[in-house]
Structures are given as C-alpha cells and as structure tokens.
Image (cartoon, rainbow, N blue to C red):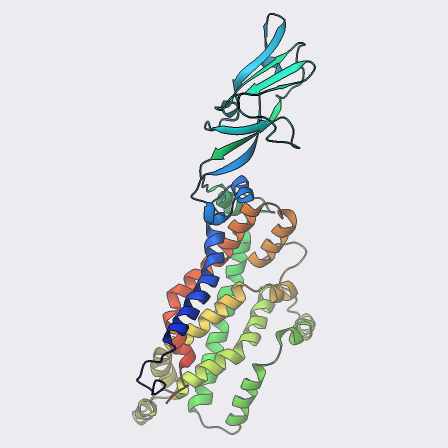
Length: 383
C-alpha cells in the first residue's frame, strides 16, 4: 500500500539522498570557482580551494639587498637585512631555505651556506647576513628560496584584472556586454513569437492545426549542428552576414520549437470557461491573448525564459559560426574564456575569476525565477 497516492513511499530516503548528491555535485565546483577567484596564484598552486581559510606552507622567492648597499667590515663585505622587509611583506616564520631552485629546503633557519668566497645565513624571522671576501657586483640582490607558513590571503586584484584592467587579452568587460547584447534579444524574440503561435495552436481552430503541432514536436529532435552551415549560407546569401542580427535569428530558430511546445501545453490547460466567457463578452482573439492568456501563462513564459537565457548565455558554437569575426569586437564571454585558456593557461586565478564572472548572471537569473520552472514544465501534463 506504500505506492498508493496519498501514502508516503518507503523509498523517500533514497530520493532525499539522491537530491543531496546531485546538489553537492553541482554546488562544489561553483563554490570552488568562487573561492579560487579571490585567491592568489601562489595559494592556488599550493593548496586546494577547500583549504583557503587555513594557513599553509608555501615556497617563496625573495631577494636580498642589491650589492650597491654592501658595507665593509674589516676584510669582509657585508649585506644584512630582512628578506620580508625587502619585499614589503609581513614577516613570517621560516621553516627551511635554500639558494637553488633545485633544493629549496637545503638549509634550516640559522644554518650557513658557504662557497669559496661567500657565506649566507638566514634566521627564522627572515633576518639574513651575507659575507664576502671580495666586493659583490651586480644590480640585483641574491635570490633565496624560503619555505614559510603563510596565512590565508584573499584579494580583489583578480576581479580588477578581469573587469577593469582594459587589457584586451584579460578583460571580460567588453565580452560581458557583448554577451548581454546577444542574450537579451535572443531570449525575448522567441518568447514573443512562440507565445502568439502557442495561443493559435491551443485555442484557434484552423485546418492543419494538428499537423503543425506534430511538426513542432518533430523539430525538437532535429540536431542543432545539422542546420548551422546551411543557415549561415542563407544569411550570407540574403545579406545578413555575420553579426548580432544573424545570431538573434539563429537562436530564435533553434529555440522556437521548445518554446511553442511548452507554451502550447500550458495554454491548452487553462480553463476553457474563461476563454468562452471572454468571447461571449465580445473580446477579440488579440484581447483574449493579451489580457487573459499572457497573465495566466507567466510561469510557462518564465520557465522557457530560464532555458533560453542559460542556453544563449553559455553558447559558444552558435556565436563562433554566426557572430565572432577576426576583429574580436563581438567576442562573447565563452569565447573570451577559451582565449584565456591559451594566453593564461597557467594563471588559474585569472581563469577562475573569468569563469565565475561568466556564471554569475545565469545563477542570479536561475535563482530569481526557479520557482516558476517546475510549474511551467509540468503545465499541461495533468488535467
């Protein structure tokens, strides 16, 4: 009797566990990107994002004073100071140090590294002393490698670099507005067109209506990739070419079947009495559509708006084919991130920041409208 409607199923615990697992799998990468976007390159290279609040040992490269600041003490030429002070950093406790990148932990604090003419010693607090039998030469100080326990550090420099630097390679600002220019019209246009078509298929009697509905359902299974090149050739032949207009039309064409299907199912499930009473009162089809159907169809409109917005915002393929040219003036955020992978492949802090900037707007849209998503998708499924 557990599977009878109105009775609680014995498998509820399995459903709850599955939901928790799915949410965790979705949430962890997003939180990881968010945390990593505020971390420095050294911290990202040393520890995972889940250890961001915890102090961690890092290998630092520091320099001593330049040779022009050496002083002579008897027969020795001496340079002394503090490694952290020279770099303008807060003082840390050193656990090991070295003079070569091949062995960054060759010495312990207080040990002395010696060669034929020079001795170097480093204390735990970063104080160092260099002694040489001959005058030291060069424009830069000695490079030393130290291992120290570094406290957690969060910075907004990554966002400044990505959003306000003005660097054509790193900046996401122009790509952000280009993406908005693509996404907003490509979301509104198919909704407007599909709403009129869905009303006609749901509430207007005309020959061939059933065939049109079947045709729309059939279009749902047509692969997007199959139509890209023919559609681009059509755009070039009629003079549209590559640009925002062609991208809007492409997204509209690819989004219309799902939009019409969802909205038609929802509108067909609305109470017939409301429509018939409006017609008895003399309302035209346009008045019924604008004053009755549209206000009642808001959940379905919102659910498709979420799908279409997320699709166009995260799209790379359609943008590559119909929009992006050699000048790079119409580059969208997805393509900008791809280019960053080539130019900034080792700068994980920049990549994480760019990726989170890219997903921030879809997250806001989804959480703002997700309450309408299930209502819109389930509309028309039951009577």
